[in-house]
Image 1 (tube, rainbow, N blue to C red):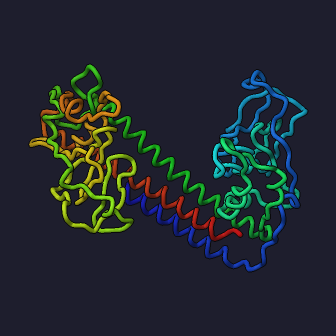
Image 2 (cartoon, helix red, strand yellow):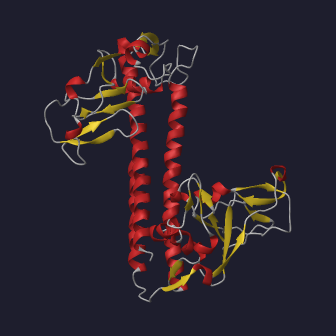
Length: 404
């Protein structure tokens, strides 16, 4: 299954590469026009109070729909009463966010491809209706390209909240090729967006499956046996404290100083929180190289599996290894899925984690089966994350190179 998914992913990337090769055959110069020369703006909802929302036969496109999507989601609408004083949106319209909390997020665009009637735009955005023949799927990536975003960000004004002037936006230059080339570029980015969406769905599905299996393969509160087990195993699980499952080591001998940490190097400098890799060092003194272990943040209770030599930056780390007759992968999953009381900004491992009891299988073999199962799931999730990340980076690169 993994090989099939990888082959399909490689095939999709090859198709993308072939398409970009074909795109390079059109050598006609691009036309440069101000946005206001090739379209007109219109306002979002006006004259409404909070009592007007949440009911009615009309719909309005939400702010978050515009903010989140280069191509608006046709389902990202909410109910409102019909009002012939409002501007109805049309297929091919472009929406812009008029304000945001940061300048980097102001003026985000979203193309509308829906054909519904009695649909309006929220009051925090303004609409743009192209008057010249422009391909909507071309406009979607073009207006969110790094070049256009940098021009829009310069127009943001404000202190605690940033706004943008419709008049100034309409003075921005838009470069566009012939309509056939627009369509090819639009189809290319639409295909790339579909691949990204599929990769995100696969990643989300794997995470959901893991959560479901965690509920089934570990005993629920008040129970002593899991509801789903591997063949050949039965009986109640036994109670052990985490101090009987893990032994810990302080990190003092493996601390990296600020002057050691670089962007590149032979040895990673780690943290247990989301960042994980803080940097690298080329100092080979004071390296932890005793095999795989878990680094545990004494304050946040975050934990990370480590299987290579490393150093750490913080002394608020405990280095955990499993005791005899414990499977590492099972113990790691047990640790990070268990709930511990938080004591605020205080160290937790010795006073909170070690004394807490947990249920584990009597059989080391059952631990190993469970540990390997979840380790494999984690590998699939990591691979899906990498695919999604690679596709996003690929799109970012093409956005940079394919627009003016």
